[in-house]
Image (cartoon, rainbow, N blue to C red; front, side):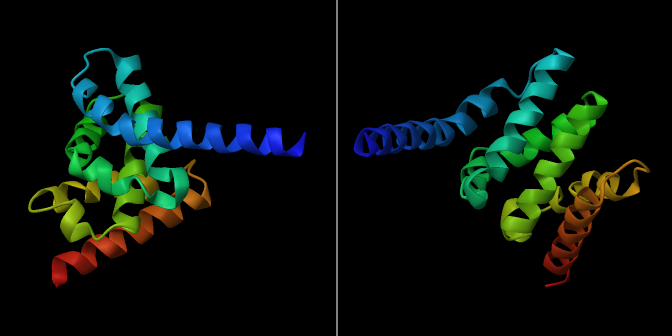
Length: 144
């Protein structure tokens, strides 16, 4: 019985990892959606991928243009969608080298979403911490 449960768990985990690896490609193609709810769902999905498995998939998101998509999703989204997009941007800035993830002007554009995490009055302390950590990493990458 335990062997069966373990095999189901391993197969399920392999299926999950394969789907998460494929998800940034799908999200990148859908990022120009016009519906508000679709953009909010995309921001939530990006956030889930960036936070899954200790940030292993951040590189795939950046490689497929996810940072530009997240910056666009932050500008045109619902209130919750903006918060998810900002938090995903902050997580990428924390888990990756911001000089690689946000090249050129994008590193300055990434500051506004991180500032929005720390400036809202109803933010919890975890969002404030992530926003401040991301701003620290962005500032360090701009100096060096």
